[in-house]
Amino acid sequence: MRFASKLPEVGTTIFTVMSRRAAEENALNIGQGFPDYAIDPRLSNSLIEALSEGRNQYAPMEGTLELREQISNKLNACYLRRFDPITEITVTCGATESLYDAIQAAVGPGDEAIIFDPAYDAYEPAIRLAGARCVRIALMPPAFRFDWDEVRRALSDRTRLIIINSPQNPSCSAATREDLDRLADCIRNRPITVIADEVYEHVLFDGRRHQSVLAHPELRERSYAVFSFGKTLHATGWRVGYCVAPPDMTGELRKVHQFNTFSIASPLQHAIARYLSAYPDAWQGLSTFFEAKRDLLAGLLRGSGLEPLAASGTYFQLVDYGAISQEDDLAFADRLIREAKIAAIPLSPFYAKPPHMTLVRLCIAKRDETLREAARRLSAFATALRPAS
Ligand code: PMP
Ligand code: GLN
Figure 1 (tube, rainbow, N blue to C red):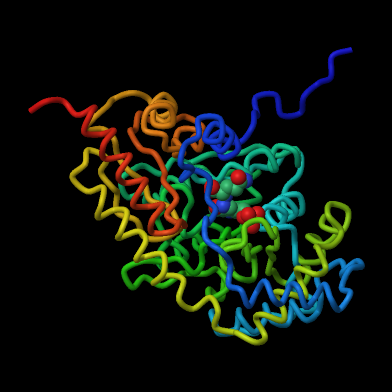
Figure 2: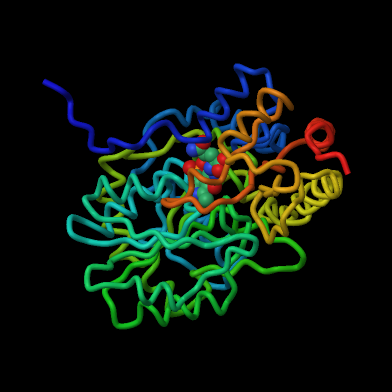
């Protein structure tokens, strides 16, 4: 008997593929999004303390109360509203698990879910595993703006979910307050839930402010808002995230969570709670920190033939290689790995119907030396490829 796949055309994620290729080719990996610098030593010490106190057994299913209280304080500081740690906050295995659980809670067979391309790759498989259909709306470079009239046209009697991601990975764009108002207009009087993937809530550039659904009175009543300590504390490998939603929606999410991961690593939750209680502002400088990295990399690349696009947020930078090559982005990214020894992420895997574009994504969450070395290799590669003028 042939085993029937439920996700026949899903392969390995582009992030894993590129990280593997980087290792094989001994390339500098500025593809997959993860920092190459140490976490705050005070956070490491909190973990050592949690372990020496013997915090080694199951944490409560919904997350330790101490951590949910710290999350509630942090949300209050950011979005000026107190969310109830008991009924509205759930700790999950990274943002990825929050997204999966929220999708399973929100849609089922016969339903439709709208997502925006270039879409983070975890959304569609989870929607399909729930038995629902994904409707994909393409945002186009260079600005990747929403077209809310197009969203309205895509709505049907079956639409039950819209997922927005702001700041958006991989386009590096960010939703405005007007975007959230238009989204609220679209779903008013319809049975549609929103999932807001806000993992880059603290990485906005040039004085922009993050527009969270949690600060939007109409949207927060209908939304699962998803966050990640992986991004906020530079610790992607800890796999700690959380989801904030009204009590009835949280109840449904927890029904999935309890049979998915059940509960999240206890020492890690204790460590983060202790750290946030001692340093409640630990996340405050993130925009400044990453803006300096964006400026460093973009400044070094400008004029090289790999032209940086304007970035509103996230810890990524798109570059346009159109001046030096018209190859498709998969071929170009492969060439970058082999010839420039740089691993980058092509954009076409994030589109259902990829338009012709000459963009790759670079990760800026790297030490300055790494970014300088990456720019040096990229510029040398681009110079070699540049048509003689
Ligand atoms: N959503 C987006 C937009 C992301 O970029 C990421 C991770 N890069 C995630 C979700 C998943 O976050 P986590 O690593 O906490 O699971
Ligand atoms: N979200 C990370 C990125 O955008 C990758 C996470 C993963 O590999 N699943 O690079």
